[in-house]
Image (cartoon, rainbow, N blue to C red):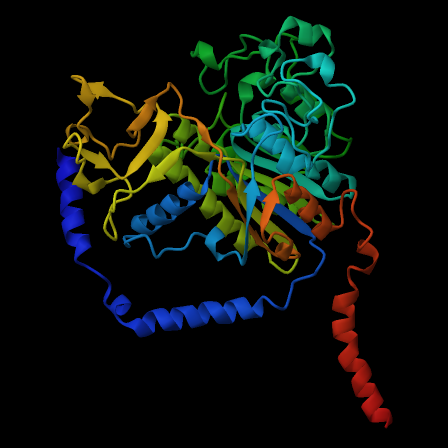
Length: 520
């Protein structure tokens, strides 16, 4: 009831309060003119070679999630919210990506990860393989492996890194290094006998063996690295957090042993250890901060677990030591989990934290030599509406009751999911619950234990060298090809020998003209 009254009070206050400057038509005209001047400056294209590449992936961050996160960010800053700007909103180029898998209209995170990392669309549930692979069928994998932009960057001598708030063996990060007929084969403990006998490797083992010189790996997923029943270092009494491996391997030790002589490899599991590292003396870094996925940002223990922003800062400083540049994959992976659970507050706070990481990375790099791309793998059946007034709390109520059942409803709703609740044969009255709670499950139209993905296009934001190549409606698998073109890595490099010529010409031409004038 308290949350209900507070929301009504906020609505009454905000509905009548239009900022004074917005009442003046000249405010909007000047704002449009400033935007026009910015757009005209974009005619001078940044055609530099991208030394560095950063791909930010908001798992499940559809356009409705981006908009709601923007409002939340503004309201956390005690503003109305709608006029706020996310860091990704400041990127000058925006495109749309079509997310379908080769066998699915509404995709999953594995097939989409293969698209935006490997440049090839694939079947749902498979990672790092072509559409010739059938999910769960180990014997269809051989010869169908496809490599990722992380591998292309590594082959050109760049440093590479992965940062995620999920398990480092989850769908998004695994497509960067693994080839698997099933995204859920995190360790051999999750694999069927026929797959093991068929010679297929679990994803955690591929993380250590396929590309052993990945400089930075930060996220969750400790339990998949240790033998079955090994107690977890942080939760020694909890059985569900124990090691899962059947082969008896300690993959953290194997990761360490695979490093070249004379190179320093550090494994950390605690935030304090991570932030205390002297990065100038570390060549390889593995940080696994939870047995499974990392904890939601709203619930995170900020003594033991680093934030996504903190991990990104460490990763960039590590990777910047390579004079040839770097590729970094950053995943805000638990946006997706919040939506699946119907917990919009968790999902949107995860999105705001991803955006905070985008801003931090922008301060640590330069758009002159760093191509940054922010996108999503897919959307969700998440929406907000109900004719809410300006400044309405994003987790608040719509300003009217339903004209059918005469009950209030929250602005945020889901098309399906666990928030479907019938009380006494009727839709639950949300005024009787704390709908502002972090774990409140927003009402859904169709009952499901887990809410589903959405099938609409997702946004692609780009800034830096060749960012203008991301400009319209694209197939999702186009993204790594455009990024690779910008950095002169991967298979499409015919243009690279002349890539620096425009910049050189721009510098030399004035000098040559001056010499001619002096000679005359």
